[in-house]
Length: 303
Length: 222
Image (cartoon, rainbow over all chains, first blue to last red; front, side, top):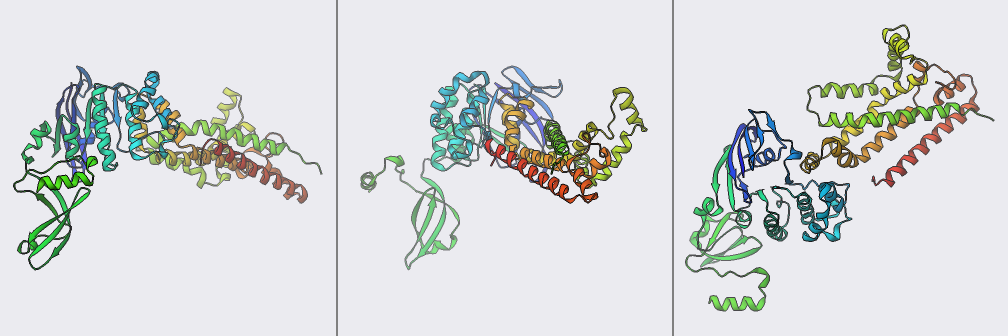
């Protein structure tokens, strides 16, 4: 169990403020830190890792004091056994993928082959990080932390610079690794979908403190509805004599919505809107299974 | 026409020694200066640049006064350590190290400062101490800067004139380096010898550059 009661003066875009974090994280929990930029999420993660020193307070992990400002205890980062995945991956540029892992592993070198195989990196052993794609670099960064068999995995927006499809794949992989390695994991993300996909718990940061802490359903539950709702952006409005057709871009697809001419005035191109169905439950199909036949069947069923 | 190669060998020895010493001292100092938050940083950075701004003859003059057997420091060096730094090769080495500081340290500091701080932090989270991080992660990453420092220090020391003349005199085999020998020949209107010295110095400098760049290419620096 991780117990943090710490405070630190931070400098956000609104000027200096004090960040006070009072948070307990259970062992083997996957928690997400959520909140606006400058709220102190990364600072909290860094304080737990030992990369940033809190001004005051205590950090106790599994009964061992890592930091205590009064008792002048500050366990060095090297002794905290945390795996930290940086936003920019921080792979060592002059070492190949295997050398990166070997450097990290030290005496745990036996696990390198197994982890490289598990992460699909066996073909990239002799490749320098600069030659890898974003998703591959992220895998190497994860593998590099895992060869040390850490107790805690800290992920600082690890998927922010990766395309949508790779992000979905990596989300699943991270959750799998979290379970397989019996980790306690903390991920910083701005993506609510990511929280629902990956995390057991979420801590919402704001105004220099943890404002809410609970399961994703409990924290974001009041936004949930069984009715079909998709947020998107208006890309085009075509008006005829009887109706207007508004094209909304939502995710990777476009939807045309027919709107009464009189209501058209309240919309403009570029506006963020919600597309919602009033009554019917929407049809849900996995994207990769859809082909033209499925689509026709789906249309027939809907009608 | 026979030409005395001793000044060339002496210049080469001086440049090589000075480069080796500055490489060993320069790496930890540059690393410390690039990562330190001390308010004295501005003072240190200015001190490093000083030999570049002050004429070599001025530096030579101050060292001559400081190390003279008549000065307190010169007396201590001579009485306690039996060391005379004026008009000696040892003195030239130390003086050249001082004069070469900016050529080695500036590229190294720029190299270290250009690295992402997360490299060092990642290495720390992987359980490595500062020394291991420096030697295995940071130093290989600043290899291009290190090679620039080595080349600049070597070539600058090889051709140093004012400092060597002021502090070393012109003692053959001890302090008479190639550029001083060239000057001597020009002063005596022995242009044919001067031509040979000038050509050998230019060619040696060029060869050193080729050698170092080949070395840097071999070690993966692009």
